[in-house]
Length: 320
Image (cartoon, rainbow, N blue to C red; front, side, top):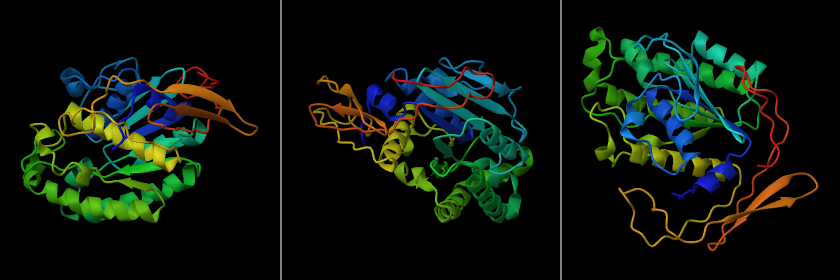
């Protein structure tokens, strides 16, 4: 796994609109990315547990109401900086009328450059004995609609659901479905299998987080569902590495003398940082970084964007 610095993350996602769709785990994926774009510190325990707040580290709650475990719960968050735009939509179903309204946002407003999505646990915990079949049908409809709505250059990443504990505690398990807490972890494995096949069939990227963290269960929270700050920072690095590879950005590993901390990645050393250098060409602007490890990053930059929805200022950038 590549070890990213704050500067490298800024350069990779410069002038990019990143959208994350999903449940509370995907909300924390969004939060860690928001934090990492401002500081290399990890999420605090308070930040991990907080939800529904009006503002998180400079973002804004665009749409939201009273916190609930109902399937009609809404939460839309957005983080805006001079060079980045991140948005999160809370989903309790992979496909619904609400998801259609989200897709309508993309059709009438700003199209995402990267779409990171997962929805599973809420879905299969509410469909009963027919959960997997219904989930597969909704997934197929959702992926079909994505291909119809999104621009071809949008990078879609399907995050496979992470391992659940043997006993789980979650408000989404309404009293009449509490018996599912012992079988849901196996249902998730089956759902992951079908979701990966469908995502690949529709031409989307698949990131197998279940496989990545199957031997790191000591970092899972006591509720058997959520994960700690160490895992979420590794998810951020894994996503950035996947995006870099998909965009053809060349990454070399950071050679640090320190041992891995918490079993994940390499701790930042005190060596020389990379220095950016702007290179102008006839057809595009490229950003080149060179450091002592001879890492080179090239990123195609766009300089004309349409205004963002929800009353945000015009999202048009030049050089930062």
